[in-house]
Image (tube, rainbow, N blue to C red; front, side):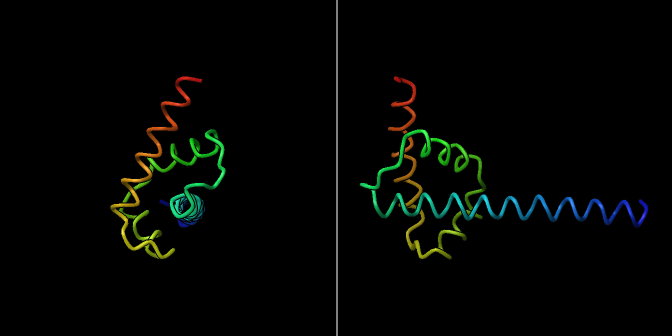
Length: 95
């Protein structure tokens, strides 16, 4: 592989990694806020979007990000978000 090709590939990898890290932080922050404030008004459509992204994330990376945000019991967090997600999913399927 040419040096120029390698640099272009490295740049693409860095860009994708940066985007993934931003997505991870965004999802962790929104779900943490919702977890801590269950009465927060968040439309099912918006929560559904974040839930869909959440389900596709690597839970180990998400655990690390949640710990950075101060969530101590990540297992309870995942359990709660999954339960909330079931309600949103069934609501969206009915509507």
